Structures are given as structure tokens and as C-alpha cells.
Image (cartoon, rainbow, N blue to C red; front, top):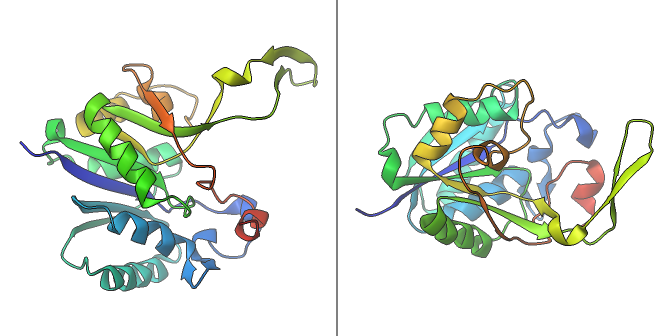
Length: 228
């Protein structure tokens, strides 16, 4: 059977650290909002005909208007689009997205999970992640760190110098076989909220790292919007 692709794009964050009075995903860069730049890059991926867009409760009408414009601009108005509301945490937003895919043939379907705030991701990187996931079932892109790293305690005492050659900065999109990532989210029982999906999958399956892109940074602060 042919492999199927689903793209989950997370756009429900509160943008608190960006210091804006509106969602950072609605900020305009190079003539398009951050959200549109991300969404339209994924729309260009051949073979991905199902999208789950996780939106905030506030400004949902603005996001839906942007979605319609992007679909028209990309000539992708006939694809399968699922729009859902985000959860209280990133993990719950992903779980909501995965729950909406419960009827999909999970063993033959692969899910991309991407933070919409990473609007500089390239089509080439997305395709590389997909290709790797088809072979190994759980993939995250990342880049090696270049600075010296120290482990410190809450008082600031240096406990250990870390080998930077073994440390990578994780990015998205992360990709997983759908049944694997659904199982991990369904059975999650930790009191510590994960910061990404790969850290959850690591407990039950091998996750492989591939080299990402330096420009694929996540917009977190206002300065990130003006630093490219």
C-alpha cells in the first residue's frame, strides 16, 4: 500500500514571550503572516493531502480567513482539512489533533508535527524528514550546538561540563508512524509536560536525528521577528 501523510500544524500558542498584543503568528513578514508562511510551505509538499490545523480560541476567524487565502494561493482547495481548537498545553494540542485522526489507517500513515512559529522551515527539510521517517518510523531534525555547555544547579553552581559534540538542538517538523505517536499520547502518564513529541516517543521506541537547518528557528521573542 502507498504510504499516506498527515501534517499537524500547531498554531494555538499564547505568544506570551513575544511581547505582542496579538498572536505572533499573525505578524506579517515579507508580505505574509508567520502562520501563512508556514502553512504554504507545507502545502507545497507532494503527497500530503490531509492537514490538521490546531488553532487558538481567540482570533480563530482571522486564522480561518488566512487558511482560505493560502489554499487559494496554493491551488490546494480540495484537500482534506481538519480544524480543531488547541489544548491547555502543547502536548494536549497534539493529542487533540491525533484524536481527530482516529479513523485513519494508522499503520500505513505517517504524521508530521510542526510548530507554526517555525516559519522559515524549507520544503527541502520537510521532504528529508518524510523520507527518513518512511525508513525509520520516528525522526526529528536538529542542529549541533556550537557553544560550550554547562550543567548548573539552581544556585548557579557548575556541576558538569557537557560534551557539545553529543548535544543537538531539536527542531520540527518531527515525523512518526501514526499508530506509534497515537499510542504514546494515549498512554502518557507523566507529571512532567514534554516540550516535544520525540521526547515522549523515546521511552518506547528509537528516535533518529537528522540534520536540520540553522534558519529553521522558532519565533519566540519579538527580536526573532526582526533578526533574519
